[in-house]
Figure (cartoon, rainbow, N blue to C red):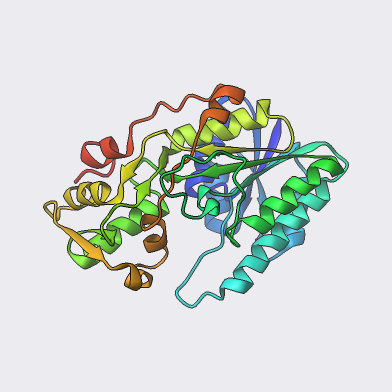
Length: 297
């Protein structure tokens, strides 16, 4: 199957590309820059130049493939206009989905478990409504296209980790270094769910190959960690000696986007992906990666 992967050189996208090609699928990788195009060509991949701000370029890429896996996300600077950003993301998704209507081709959207909001201690499955404005419009657009000849699928990752990278994990490290200790919010009782990057990539491929249309899948490894415990592990990995620092809830904006993530309880079920797709996450745990793995100092 020929798959158009947006964000093909990004953290999640690159892992998906590796998994797809390893399973014999052909990849058309979207590149937003000469550097990204060169990286894809070095892997022997076909390249499509596109840009989130140019919806038609995204649609043209989608038309050239049997399936689309959308992982691209815009760069977020300190002065970003959030409403403009959401509008750009929604327009890009709409253009790709509309170009596939009536074809029965596959469109897999990368959403996020953060779309559920704070779950508390309740384990939520995919039937839980997505409420976050960053996630809901695109999910509604994609799922709505199921009745219009698009094989729509949604993946809802928790925090992806592995190989010493990941935007959320590295943001947590950077904030901790700035503050002089592993950072948590309030009492540190937020609940962290996460997924190893190779396991996440495998889930995308299994969904591509096996899923029925109109289905969503949570992506996590099944472990639940208190934020304070992770913060201490990050402190050790960053060479800060295990020292931790609490940021009060009413000052969470000081922590940037990572503050909202590590200050929220996120507990999700992965039973659906395991049952329907035979997905079996088996990579090293986040704590193992922090203590002795790719993030360890």
